[in-house]
Length: 404
Image (tube, rainbow, N blue to C red):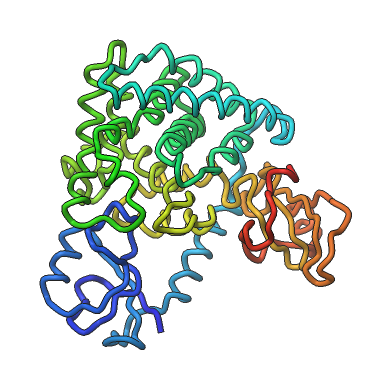
């Protein structure tokens, strides 16, 4: 049985099933191992980890601890309660109308970031004027409809992760700031900071940066230096703002003070820095990497919501969930009726009941005539369909975006 326990209850002889944190928050070679010595417990606590999941079939038990299913059910109930009372962000056009233009903007931005990173690797300075127009175009697309561009940003290959992740963080920061009602200048500067937040990784050896496996403790220490490198590179960049630098310098700080490089706590971290921490982890969790599979957006949001007890500002996490939706555009879902569909738009009245284009019946195992289902309307009529779970696109061997 898998249970969630406080680190204070961890004992030698217990089997760690999950360290319950993002991979850049711990120095262990694996998230699963038998606790053989007390210094391992001290190391877990020193990493800022407050709760872990243990496997009682492989080690000692804690009788009073909740099971993973109980924890998951409680978190999902809280998220759905929030979603049912939270409207979606306003939009000027539907996602499918923005998709073609968003695809062009996304590819242009990726090429620009790739070129800038290559320049920095060769010892050249960041030329901010190359990036300014791309951030402007991304902002315009997101203001028309944020779902289109953000759904495209989830598409990454293992080999191009670093620069595509940077574009994703930039787009997510723009969308997040807009959802928070920030002014256009702050939105623009946050987008630049997001696009350049990992520029310091160009100073990290490729053998470590692109290692196809978990880092050793020494390698982990080296890659953590990218935050300081990013700050130094941006401080030497002509025309860069302090807000953009904050995004890069503070995206690995944590609300409880367990982050790095400065160990800042609470409001010692700027608001943009706190937002960048949420965005960076979300995009990392939902990206395919050589050492872990991409997590579905709904699962990633649940983990971030769980970690907001300690690592993230809870109010900002809720604002982020409203920003992207509980079921983001492009998410593949299974409905209670057995129909498979893709989320094509958030609903104006409830994040828990988006609009879904259904196209396949799991009961008859056949394609059906595509139909748009507004889940909020069916629920409002006292019955109808609802989402029972998300589905893996790879399992069904399809690209959800082609159904938008």
